[in-house]
Image 1 (cartoon, helix red, strand yellow):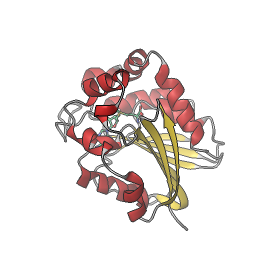
Image 2 (spheres, rainbow, N blue to C red):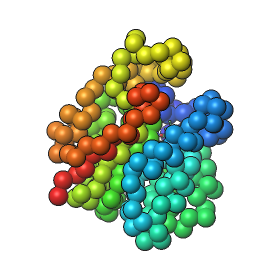
Image 3 (tube, helix red, strand yellow):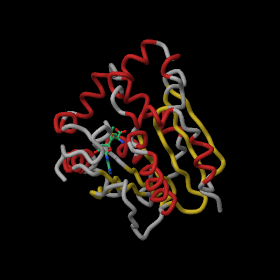
Length: 222
Ligand SMILES: C[S@@+](CC[C@H](N)C(=O)[O-])C[C@H]1O[C@@H](n2cnc3c(N)ncnc32)[C@H](O)[C@@H]1O
């Protein structure tokens, strides 16, 4: 597939070539610089330990991986995974100073097996953009690649009712996700209940932007 033949035409997480090329700049400008501090706070809340092995599914440009890498010793590692060749170029360039940070071009919406396990699986603003049956495949991929006691870390929309959100959030949400039925459907799900049905427990939540975004941490039991 090329960078613009969408697998899920209604989804907004498969980005246009222009957005892929200028992703970090567009986010910086579109959020008045707020995105960087949001992602810093979310990554801080993950409680990364120096020896952690982290799988970043739908990793994008590597900006998040570089922020996570600052918490790691050389015994830790990050594997970023993305479908896009343009993101691969950004990632490899941004992370070139971190030998323990690697990229793999890989679809996360199909079953895969890396034959290794991780302490943390991270997904940031990716998971909402898939049909529910595909999200189950993604969750199986995450579960299969987590060590016992490891955590799944989903940074994404929290559960809220768009109609009752303030205009300063509702308008950008509708501009971004207005035509993405998956994002709307995502808001209505009880994700802790769904993850509990997969065996996850010890949930921890950190909320951002007045409870509209959430880092949801869930532990794979021993
Ligand atoms: C909205 S961006 C988020 C990027 C990054 N996680 C962040 O927080 O900045 C969504 C990313 O998911 C990737 N993506 C979309 N569909 C994918 C798939 N099926 N498999 C792997 N990556 C995918 C896109 O290429 C893009 O880099």
